[in-house]
Length: 263
Image (tube, rainbow, N blue to C red; front, side):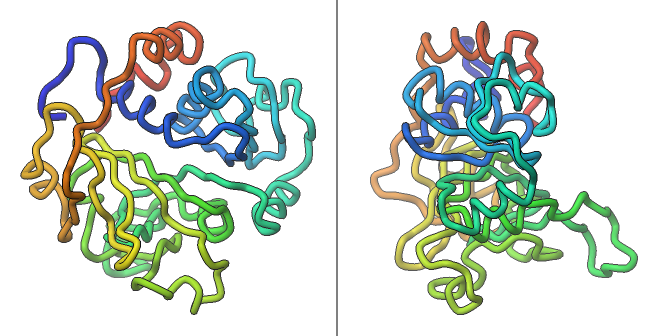
């Protein structure tokens, strides 16, 4: 973040921006960390009827606190269904899950994600990463995929070292030609510098707002591909006092997420 605010840190900004992307009454498959904090904040602000699903099998829990993982026992608290991974993945395949949150080591201009390896040789990588987990399934079948990630050239790359999770693949129509459901795919990217979406015609990543204190040149300098920019280009709305209070006092009072560094 180009100019650090005295009211909030960049993690708090990213969580608040992420929470605002979730619509009330929709369903969302939620992962560990910032996505969890964003989903809880959304439920406590603009999306009280947001239905959460967890990869470990619970559907629509009433979270008493911020879980430390998607398999935390509190993700089962008051849930409508405590099923299995198969059941929640089947829900995605049936097209009834609106949002999913993902992360990864690399993302390209079409929203394709690498979470498998860094290097040119799969057998002898420079870095072996966790792999897909359920990310490929989620990005293939949920309607809208959101990514939350730090913003630097190593992550926002022109060429993935490995394609783990499909975005728009090579551009318009490529997902459908690969057999994936139409009208699904990348939706938003929330980074330490900006909020990004995708140009409807080219399917390329496009900055929709710059975070306070960040310039267009900052984004260009930290992106490994040619980034598109909306015109006009607004400044991301800062967290409100109400959002910050709820986030700090009710969602993450221990600072598990908002107390971390963004890098």
